[in-house]
Image (spheres, helix red, strand yellow):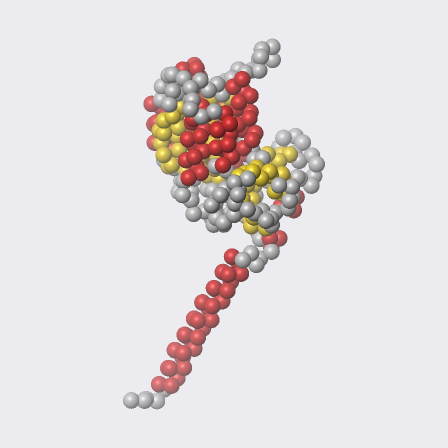
Length: 332
């Protein structure tokens, strides 16, 4: 039975339904606009260092770069914009820049590789302690994760992906050096693990290896290790335990570590003495806290397995960029 005022109630409900529908349509259109890249890159705000961490969703055919920039005095710079750092992919400008973040807060995925062969027995104690301190300072609970690998005659996964620093410290304390050095196998194992770990968002992948670079037992070769790090989109930092003497021959292991680190956009750091390894970990920490992260779609991208070179050419000539040299356009 129709009652006085019923039509007003009906109109009110209809109006609410209409407004809700308009809101949903507007949200859907906004999402489509963002997905299609409707907001110009120049309008995207760079995250400030004190903003909370956020996730960047992975895009198909997207290249993700991590790099650092230093001035003529080797000081890390973290206040540059994308306009200051033009990018070339196979000598071509990218098709689209998807994001650019300074002083990155993106999640870290760290592979920490410890040489547990007999050749480093005299330094093993302070190496383990320095690694423990680094993990405690660097990993943010609930956001970053690391896994711990020891290598001697074989490769041993001591801790899988975790943010439990105490568990990793306990594993380090139980380690005892012995045997040969399966360095290349360890890097291939770590890189493959980083590459295949399912991640819905963009993460920063880092390999840190403490060793003298002398591989004495392996299935993989140097080329395999170098390529594995590149395919994992990872940056490799090598902490060299070699004692360098200007009057002696340049150690072969030092040359190996130089190849592995520089190709990936990382660096080789001296770590023979206690003070050196503490400084090396401190340098890595500063580099990771001063990283730029850039995501782009190459122009005319083809997933054909070919190697693409990457060049970042600062507009100011005195600046130096440390970045991986390229990537493989993985077949799908």
